[in-house]
Length: 160
Image 1 (cartoon, rainbow, N blue to C red):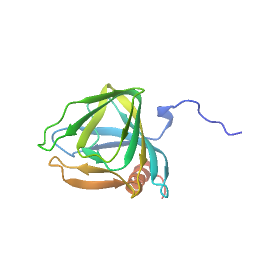
Image 2 (cartoon, rainbow, N blue to C red):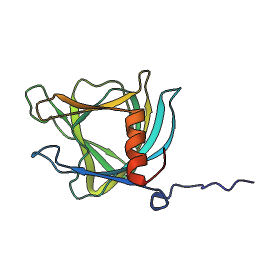
Image 3 (tube, one colour):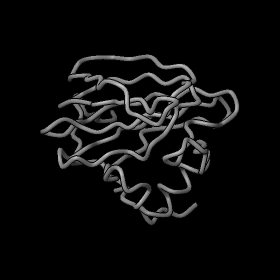
């Protein structure tokens, strides 16, 4: 009989830390791990973790249908509006869910004061998950299932 975990143990997972100089307007730091994927079906499940140090994901816009469930702490989200300003902050707390379709606005997201942990279930018909954009809203990178898998494998030392 296969033994299965009956609860999530984040520290038992392999995490890819993301940092970088994407902008002078915000600090980039978060971790992610890939739970599973199916290229043929266009699905990818992952966890994102923020540490409560003000670290964000790079400014991005979801292009896939994405289900988000906050598992611990908080997820803070602010849209970058057409005039370049940030919209009001939306806060999702542990247990809260959101279902996103392709988004008009790029956004910043980070954890709350004590960090956060969220599940992302992504469903795409063309492989694209989200677009990283610069401070002017120009797409600098289209993150696909394949590119995210390659990034994870490269940084985790997993053979392709």
